[in-house]
Image (cartoon, rainbow, N blue to C red; front, side):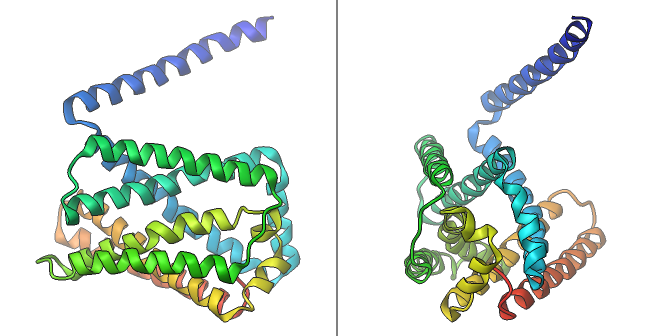
Amino acid sequence: MNREVGLLPGLAQKFSRARGLFALVSVLVRARGWPFILSWFHRLSGIILFLFLMAHLWTLSSLADPASYDAKMRIFAFFLLAFLEWVLALPVIFHALNGGRLILYEGFGVRDDRVMIRWVACLSIAYMAILGWAMLRGDQSVSPALFWLGALVLATFAASGATARFWREPQRLGWRLQRISGAFLLVLIPAHMFFMHLSFSVGHDSSAVLQRLQSSFVRGVDLLLLAAVLYHGGYGAFSIAGDYLPSKTAKGAVGVALTVLVLLLGWVGFRVLLGGKGG
């Protein structure tokens, strides 16, 4: 009884903090609007995904020892960790769809934020529901080559449209490539997350991953995906840092550090994929 009473102040304090956070968001929405809030969520989700990329590549690097990889993946058989894995899909799909909204806003004159934000929310909910269903079933299967052929065609179509619109813009090359890579990843990142959770073995069993990478086509798609993610994430992180760093020297130092990090991650990822030990 005393223990329960002792917990009440802590719970009340947490509730008060949560209520204060919602109140702050509400004030910011009224003052600046939802686009301002979503711009911060977009940056935060991008940082989360970049950190996840590092963890993902570290995990994949253990495929050199299949038993080690299987041991790491076995923990995701527990419901709580599987649930957290599903939750991770939320920043994935939000970042992809909100990035698509920004591309339409900047390049194609789609300026009705209220409608577009609703579309982002509805499609995100639908994606999470379908992904959750697939993860709960855990017995879905599809031809990897056929799945990735369809995804690659759609991604190439999206990137081609972005290229046609942004390539002649009077902006830096890095800015233009950021939009083009974003359009490409708008399809491939949610597709990758969905494919890897069609069944537990698809992304969690070393033999299934290694067998899939025997296909040169699938490996090629993975290499394209890795290159696009590294560029998009690295440039995005540099842009965020550049908005707040006070001097060119600091920006240059961060740029060098991010370049080294991206090259290191690229070396790890390309080594894994080209060695046939990745997924």
